[in-house]
Image (cartoon, rainbow, N blue to C red):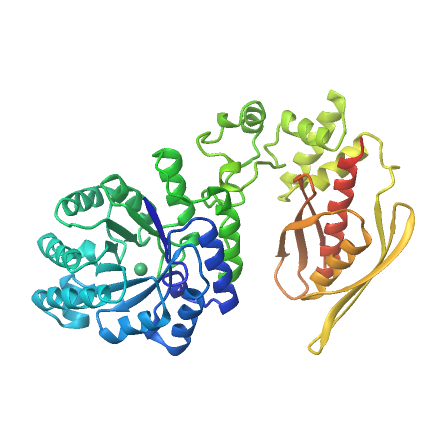
Length: 493
Ligand code: MN
């Protein structure tokens, strides 16, 4: 079982996505280190810039094979060879609708071209993948004929693309089942997600005997995209018990990396990598999960397995066990009556439609337990920001930390980055910013900014905090300070 990733080729064909070259290097490195077997780096014949990009990735000496895409044209194959790829992926339309309307070739011509070009590739490279484009809408006898011809001409793997995403898992079982005994080469699938079946179809293909899957990170790709790497890999690993060779604890970081570089956000309810994938809010679920995580999680898949974290979130459905546990984490031990009052206040905030963060919980508990006099570790007195079209964003912060006044200044990518870095400089606490989110409450340029952040300490504990205000930079700084104060509180014995 091998995994072929086409984030940098099909994924980059996502409307509106264009990866910078340094981001392509970072994605290729990440995928290779995560254990992906082959990375489709691009389509070298499509433009001189694409050629240079594929060539640069091919020269990175990655553990993964680097693949280049080519039409059934010697020129396209030569571009792949010149770019130095390990594996040439040649494709040709095989369905009647695509043959007639795109290449205008008869089935006989398609078979002859396939034999010639696959043979040409194999004369220069050890590895060649053949794709019968629109395979799932190709008449089965012809698909068998052309796939067999490709294998006989030396294709080392034969891909079966569901190019327009119209297949179903049961049809895929039948199709791959029919091809396996007829085609003398390993089979691979490339499924599109037009009806939301890309992952299901991919898994069905494996069940029927395919030995490679094509995926993209976050399922990006043409139109509705491709099969998602995290979902495909985890279904195969956790449900089917098939080893994919992927280092699954790197799935979440890989997803976030590609989300950042593609500019495509991950919806919170996305399986495996979404923010809510291992989050629990309701009292019954939180109580169960605290006793044994498998009560309300798959169990065969844990957050650790995919590099995620389990999170109990505060909201109107919150329960006593979760709140008591979260307060114990910051060394607070309320009586039953106090706990009731804390929960009442959390629900009141949540019922107004607001998200309740860990920092909010602490503030509430502090009030209920009469601990308001406790001095905060960091008390910001002043923040000044400079930014502009010809100015490097710079922030200076003056704050009282552990009773002593401290001042620090920092530059950053933008004013928010500069302010958060400056705060990091004055607080002698090794924390890293794990998440930063901002939303505008109400429309307009005078909207209130609501900033939510999560910070992680050396021990891997994560706390979230938020702040709202009409100044984005100040709200961000305040959220950071709230999180640091919460972490310091958790450190106290
Ligand atoms: Mn595709």
